[in-house]
Image 1: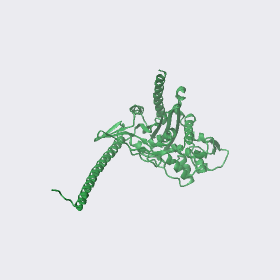
Image 2: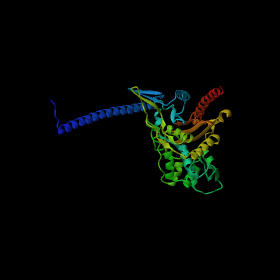
Image 3: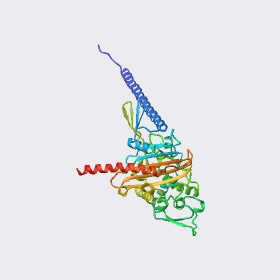
Image 4: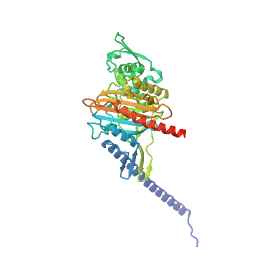
Length: 414
C-alpha cells in the first residue's frame, strides 16, 4: 500500500525542516555568543583586577591569577630585582624607573618607591599628574626641525637667563647683553628662551599639536592595561605657544611610562606601536590572544636621526653629561647614549619634579637597546638625583651586554 503525499504537504514538510534547522542554528549561535561574551567579560575582569593589584602592591609581580585566568606580564625578573635593590635605600619623597625594550616595545622594568609613598606608590607610575617640563623639548625639536625649518647649527640670540621665559625675552631686540647660541646647544642646555622664540618664528599651535600627537600625547600608548592619557592643550596665544614648546608650563602633563616612550620613539624604528605590559593571557588552560598593537607614531627616519643626535649631544655636553662622567672610555665607545632632562615644581602629589629620559643601545648591530625614564619628586629637599639612578641602570645594562658580547665572540670563534 503506497502513501500518497500531496505537493502542499511536501512544501509544508520542507518548510518545517528548514524552520527547525534555522531555529536550532539560531539557538546554537546564541549559545556561542553567550560563551564568547562570558569569556570576554572574564578577561576584562582579570585585566581590571590585575591593574588594581599592580597599583596597590609594593612590588609588581611577574604573573597574576584572577579566578581561572592567569595574566603574565612582560617584566623581566632580573630587571625587577635590580630596580628593587637600586631603590631600596631611596631617600627621596618618590622615585620611579621605567625600562622599555626598544626591540619589542615591551616594558621590562617598572618600579616606584619613596620615603613618602610607601603605600600605592605604583599608582604614580600610571597617573598623568606630572608636568612634563623640558621633556617636551623632544617633541618641540622634532617639530622645529621637521621639513628643515631650522637646523641644529641655526643660531639664535637671547637675553637673560635661559631657564626663565619672560615676554621681553621673546622680542628680537639686540643689546650689549644679548648672547648667541645654536639650536643644538640650546637643546643640550634646555634653554627655554630659544625654544620659545624658535616656536613663534617657525611653527604654529596646529603643527605643534600634530607632532605632540605623533609622540603619543592625548593618546593611549599602552595595550590592554589602562594608562592615563598624557595631557596636551593647544596654545591659544603666541606666548602660550612659547611656554608649551619650551616645557615652561604646568598644563602639559605626562606619566613616567610615557616619559620613557618619548625616548623609545627616537631610538626605535618606525612605525612605533603601543607599548605592552601584558605578555600573555591564559583562560582556564586556553591561551587567549591579547589585543593587537596599534600604530602611535610614524615619524620620518631622518627627523628621528636629528633628534637622536641632539639627545646624544646632551649627554656629551649638556645637562645629562653626569650620566657618563664615571663611565670607562672602553665601555662608552661601544654604546650610543642620548638623553633629555627636565625639572619643574608642581603636579600631584605636590613637589618638585626632576626628570631624566634616555636611551642606550650598542653602536653596532641591529639591537635597539632600551629606553628609560626616571622621575624624582622632592618635598623639602633632594637626596639622590635622577642621574644617580640613571648611572646604576646604565651600569647594569652595559655589564649584561658585555657578558653577551663575550659569549657571542666565544661562540663565533669556535
